[in-house]
Image 1 (tube, rainbow, N blue to C red):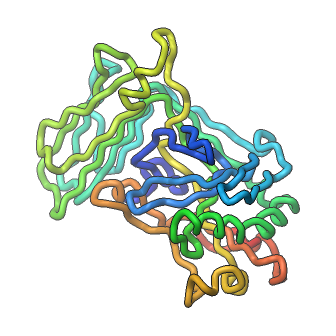
Image 2: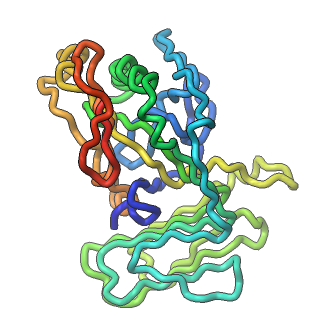
Length: 314
């Protein structure tokens, strides 16, 4: 199953909860404008955001781009009880809105996934004209090498492994389930997603067929819900998917900055799979690229390349 469970440009995430960010390690959601990377488990780590100032531990500061992101943003609401499922899974009709029963079609294949948004959510993404702005082109050319320098102080990052988040899908509450099998699944499988009677924002999965095949997750986590006041609802800070582009430096720029760390400037695609279950959600084959030429390399800007999303050359 590919990332098209949400749409063809979105990479679903197995870990939607807020994560530590910046020097203060404050918990925050993935945001449009984040620069970061995916680790081996499929978890996204943001190192900075182009729309806000950031001060690295080594004293180096990253200045934000002088554009109001809201002026370039488009948003779409996900209705309550919204579902994303792979083609081999269907929802069985149930009169109770707080219950979701799913069944796999016969000959379901080797993998499949479900994402449930009981309270709905919101998608946000940058408009295409953002990438045509001269200041955006100049900003990426000037700053992309330093992003890789900063990232490599935290993690060994190859060229093309840094991602620019151009869109997010967020939810107040969510449930994710996935199955993975070494052999074709030919018998019917059922799984139930339901509301916890003691807390309307807490959900659970009940697996009552082949338990071994299913991996499940829900959010917000119990400790997040425990921090809410009795009349308070969860925040819209659970990121279930990102629309991202891989940031590639041209070969000359990569050699200039990282010759000591790499014998080859060859660019690499972001990892295509993570772990035994999260890879069912996370696939990168359709991810677009932003190809950045160094300030001394010359070349044209924003040359469209083939792909599901237009890759961009800066």
